[in-house]
Length: 401
Ligand SMILES: Cc1cc2nc3c(=O)[nH]c(=O)nc-3n(C[C@H](O)[C@H](O)[C@H](O)COP(=O)(O)OP(=O)(O)OC[C@H]3O[C@@H](n4cnc5c(N)ncnc54)[C@H](O)[C@@H]3O)c2cc1C
Image 1: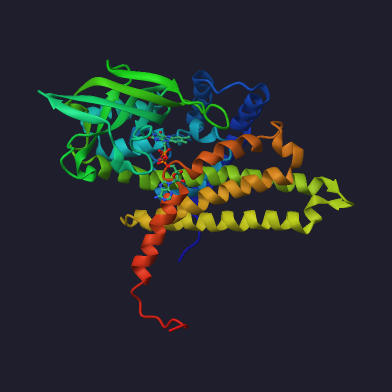
Image 2 (image 1 turned 135 degrees about the vertical axis):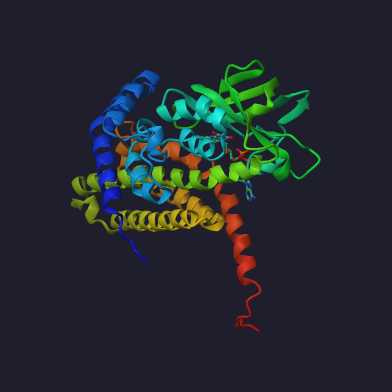
């Protein structure tokens, strides 16, 4: 077992850290102060700087303009980018584009690569992944998919209602999950389609207002009203929708964990700095044992989370599906990040609640991480089922028997 992070990875991670500190954090703090949102123009300025620094699209191949890094290599790099919510956007490593690029890179045909993937990798356009539906449609249980695509001659006619399609306000195209064969199990009867956002039949209803304020690109509600798409709009093959979703979600869950670990780490650093300077009851906060425990718990949990990420990324690199390990990772890190942010707010007192520090924003925004890409309870029960399957039949002596 080798815990060494390769030198070239450490070097890139350091450069990403420097870029985030010098270019991204000042923009983040300015926006925090003014209460303004990040605009596409402002983001493109940052992106131009990231490209010039050679820090662009870490997971995409070099010949496409990316850095050609593997899932294992990006663990510390995405964490450094994730020290600011804007960092991953700036270096083109943010959700949902990063997961969508990965998906298209694996399954798009030549024409789709040229039309959608290439400009997406170059950062000329944005994308959205449209799977979740308002109740009673697909949410935690994706089998409840109600959006349909029905064949009509040589076209598909899509009807349905989705929401929380992140980036929908800025996206040039959508990846839509729809049921193409209601007569088989949804896992074999769903298909992914690629559609330009301005195609007739796509109605952007609204951006769903969310806790923590607006995220770049929004989380839009969409109605598909007789959206007509040709066969060539299918990503992969008809009936492969869930197989593709799984291929996207495994690594995408890990990259979310990497980015959020970055925010939690920065929050821990801010909380430690505050506790080391602020005095109460005759000593520094950092000298009170209950504060020390909070800091130590955050450090230990983040350390454990990092090891889990490295392990899950390594398993995926071996070609394993690592479903249990990615579930454990997503569950543990989503809960950890929320706990670390909660402790950081607590340690910083009124300052933690104020918008003078970014941790109050992160605290609110991180809450969704326990819900998207599989709610904590869903991952918890997956792991529980696995535990019972693995261990229940083992013949170990039970004391009461
Ligand atoms: C900020 C944000 C961004 C998002 N981005 C996208 C996106 O880009 N594209 C997209 O398609 N979707 C996106 N989503 C949607 C997200 O994937 C869903 O919210 C998530 O899958 C949960 O589905 P739901 O909201 O319908 O909750 P529900 O399915 O209604 O579940 C509600 C709650 O029930 C509990 N629960 C569910 N199943 C179980 C179980 N088996 N055991 C115990 N408890 C359970 C959990 O606590 C869960 O939080 C996003 C969501 C958010 C908040």
